[in-house]
Length: 593
Image (tube, rainbow, N blue to C red):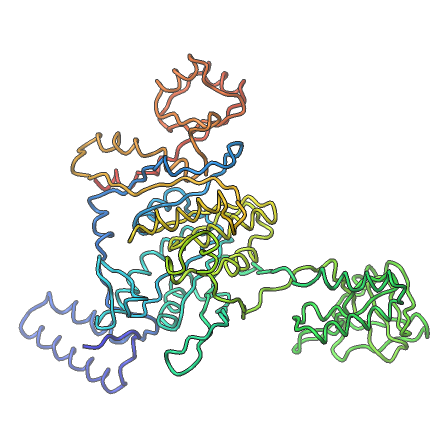
């Protein structure tokens, strides 16, 4: 039995024949007075008349999803695995051990609409033991008739939650290869909406894989966003060398034109993107600039037309066929500034370049020093050296065979968080912990305070012996790797069995597990004296009576705790911020007992 991935529309005759046959069944039901069957058969005709296009598959129930009907997942901290390099900082990262569907279910309580970036590398579903994924505790291999359906069911339940976790500006990066590319693209379009698709980024790994008679050197990174106005900007490489070349030419007594010729020669000898080589001119102050076309850019409309006088001939310069890009008022502002007569006979007036005479249209001017970023390109060439990066941290070469390179993760994450240095980044297929290392290194490089949440199961002890151990070695450093400070808390998934706690006792039992959720939502550590959790009036009274409150601190308080006027005044005098513990943490579980 083969598996249909796409819902192919039946041939017109087949469809018509099917509808005609169902109509005969309706007539027969009427004759036999089987009135209950008629609405069902009419519904079937309606379904046959519906034209569909999209992704359909045989949905499979997942054990972990079924178990949550009777077992409530909760987090329990492994305090022995806490990393606290910055005790003065209240910001924490988190490693969540357990099935990632359980972790996502709990994150939905703490981070609904709050995640800035999701960066995931799910199983590629190759169907071989090396690249297989585990579904309901069994490896799914090529001989499984429902290999694609099981994978899609697995991904669908997780990506639905992921979409809800993303903020209004949120972005998803998803690694994939050709085994499931077509399917996951349609699934993402369905969950996020086609308008959320940004790009299918091609990762050129440079190292060819030759198992199909061709040197395959690429994989994909699908990018989706909640905000269509998001721009993915990366730093231009090699700027330091470019500025140094012109600066050295100036020190050597060369003219701006000679420096310009050296710059153009440098560009010819080095393969650099257009976003850099566009800046191939040098003004009289040895500033590098590029010329931007001033023609109206839209081929279907026209821009404004007006005369611009040449500074030397005083005659109107050539007007573009479809008019100017700018309004006249914008041009007037751009003309304010220094006037320069350049060595090649052209002119600069403010931010406007003129040719030698009026026969050439003007250009606007941008300076390289002011544009140090460019759009992320859809092809990224970076060697697949994730395993080598793990070796620097003291792991053996084969401890984790398919680790993604930190350099790639950093480039993609930085492209969307360079102007949001406090971003929260989630990876719920954390694997070896590449995302955690990438975020930590980015913060060290640009002073950011980004936070990461890593979720992974502990199959073959990966969470403890690879993911966590990697974070620990990043913190302490090795002979080949400089230490990078970080704060981390390690949570494990546990369960509360509903039937063991009837009536109100279930609420009291779940209150025991509120603390990890508070810490996770607000990225704090409650062992910090400046952070307190109060679940009842007795706790609050004890803190006040024993003078354990600290000024300028935060108390996370259960919404049912009553405070009298005197207590409120004490909290106000000490400038203590009271943050109400969300009553939605376990609300759904209580309502559906």
